Image (cartoon, rainbow, N blue to C red; front, side, top):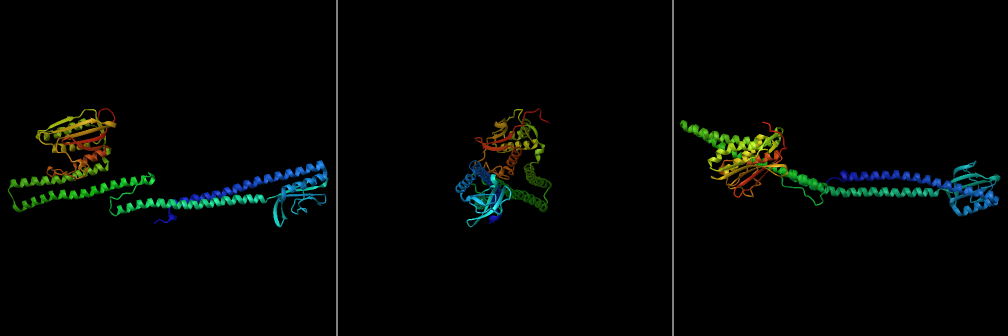
Length: 459
């Protein structure tokens, strides 16, 4: 079980939550600074306006008018406002302050002061103004509202940051559980496969998310691995079986020669049989080496433009004597101009293997057809058909496996690699091999990408 703190999803969620918290703190500082600056401007403007209005009353109505104006402003503003009108000797004439503030500036101007009022100490912003007749005016505002607003902003954003952090951690835990559940499914499948269960697959949900796409990719990879492992296992088993028989026969013949010392003619016959057995062994190894070479893809470097009509003609000339021995007909339809990009030797072997199978299973007086024809989507089809026994539908997907032999073909002398080579050549050339019924018989279709139109093919 993976610790939540080691989970990438939890770490990302906590990281984003911490980033949001830090950003919130910076935002708090910015908002507090802006709010304080705006509040100070508003406070200074209100103080300046009150001082100007009291000064106007002094100018219009004299000292009595100024005293009345101070009383009216003090009553309207309440405890938030600070007003004091004194004479030349700083004796209070009107206002809600009984004495001259000790922290006030001795000269006219702005100042800060801490005043004890109502059992509390208030921070006050003061403006000292000199009026005509030697009068002094103090107008100020309590800054408690400013502190309350700043505190409210700090508390609100602090709670928001804490909530975001908690939600981020909680969301990370939920994501961790969801992600971990999917990862555990993949891990369980991988563990079962590591223990030898190659048929195990990763479960796929219907959501189609990134995990589902990953699961499909993994399942495709596992299918390919299973096919390769089973192919290797089957190849080893069949190779051991196929090589044991000719080697055992070869050993028996040589042992018989050593024991009986037959006459020269018998020795010659036994030697021919021994050579035939050795040829069978060499044929198996050659086929396996050719398949390995094809699967490695190294032959792609030898690709060139190949005229299929030329290959079809050469293959037809090679197999015509065998078809004539069966008194069967051989129809070759290979129009010029159809070409592919590929390895001419591998393509010739693939066509030859298809024709060889058709000749092998075509009955006497039967028919074999080799046709080259264009197909849709820029492909060319190489079609080889016969009227032999064909292949059962259940065995058609299996005949391209290495060393697979159809039922009832044990006496035909094949080693089960012919169609495997054809299928490998088709995949090397980005094509495909398909088998279908010819009613009666079998029709094999080798489908390859057509080469672009070009000049004459290289010799």
